[in-house]
Amino acid sequence: MYKLFDCADVIRSKNSGPYELTFDIIFKEQEMFQRFRDANIMTKKVFAKLYGISEGDITGIIAFAPAKAIKITIVRPLASGDLGESDVYGAQQHAPLMGFAFEL
Image (tube, rainbow, N blue to C red; front, side, top):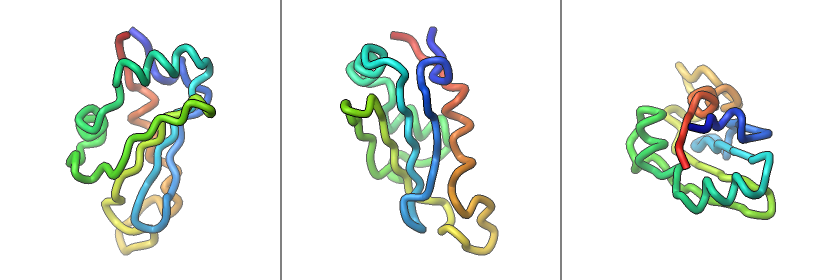
């Protein structure tokens, strides 16, 4: 069993405009990135369950090999700065990914 926190140098979230959030997972090693990517670990179904959202709210999951990165983009539940929105920069949404465990 692997923990994403142990395999990645960077796990972060950020705004991708006022209506979307992007999550970046940047792996420490190319080999682990490739194994994670090739095993199709991070699917829409897995991410939706992890975040309690609909798969339809996930606009993309992209692997970018030159950076050893997986990028996930979702529709924000509330637009950045809307009344009731609690993270205007989207920088505090990555915590569920930090505890994510997976098998290869």
